[in-house]
Image (cartoon, rainbow, N blue to C red; front, side, top):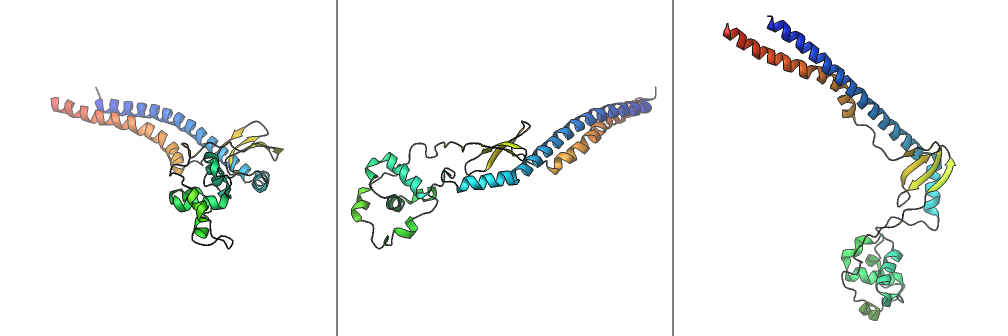
Length: 231
């Protein structure tokens, strides 16, 4: 019985089997990586196209463009307050926001442009804020509704039907959420494959061979020691 030669042959056989399995896994992983790279490149190409860029700029310049929910502009902020406290409806938006932010500065980060810094300690249009108006506003610190970040409907999709693009779906602020192509594919923002993914694909067959081969060789080496000791 030649234990050494038998161990060597078994190690090679299992190593080759492991390499074959690893090669199959590497092939499947390569297909996934190539598909991910294709989706990434195609989405980035379409998003940077003139069709998408022009549509985005057009919508942002239109009268019904509404920026993301926060921070709000002064009018949005004032309307939220007035909706909760109708008694403030006769106060102009800017004055109302100035007084609110003066009394409750913890809400300043909710307003895109803080008018308090400009008007709170200065006269507004040559006239100081009416002290009686200031006294009227005794809004408690929890004036914002229970859900301070309400869901705001996404902008309507744009049906362009050109440049290989059928429909553009927008996020708040008219960023691109997804693109439906003319052939019916829906593309989403996809990260480019990382370098380690390519390295892993290369290493899998090598590991598939080395792990079983090394394990059998190690077991054979230990077994040979017992056989020699018995002799």
